Length: 278
Image (cartoon, rainbow, N blue to C red):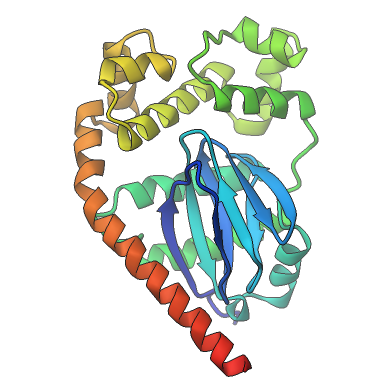
């Protein structure tokens, strides 16, 4: 029976100051919203909800972003991963995520956000999710949809623009019917529903990371007014923007302390590794 991969999961956001790091365990960076640039041993990739990254143990890497963003950071012990899965990850440091993998990432992002302050997803949930994600990454072969991917990147970078279905189709160089067909095939949703999800993701990021009035950030995220954002959030998750901001702020202090402790632990593991190698 194959072993269950040893893993730890947390959420991170990156800012304008480039952060460099290396550690003796592997990492998968799985963006939930926004974009960031990640450099691994001199190779740079642009990450967004369609493009992830794998950082091998011991590899120097740095990340920076000029826009609001949030990613799942999955720490992996490669010794607990099958050689085939480990080899695939190492060979493709900047994998493109297909529809199935994206759904798994979105699911775990929702579960992680729902946890009490300072706690990650339940170990049993993580133990079932990680092997499924690795298998999906191996089996998922996204079709090259360059026009659609470029459109998605533009919308994710600026969801507050007055996007309509006609504007999306024109931007991608597609007919409206073809745009609907591609979104149905790749995401099992409509262009409008996908756009709404991006605007909600941007609104949540702004609620968590800025002090903007809710009415102003609603406009920046692409909603016509604050009440439109409130209705959309209630329909999607049952909570209001104000309640979401309070919940995130309440967790903020404890998560900052948790991140500091995690950084210390990573540095301690790195020092131990260097001592063993000396």
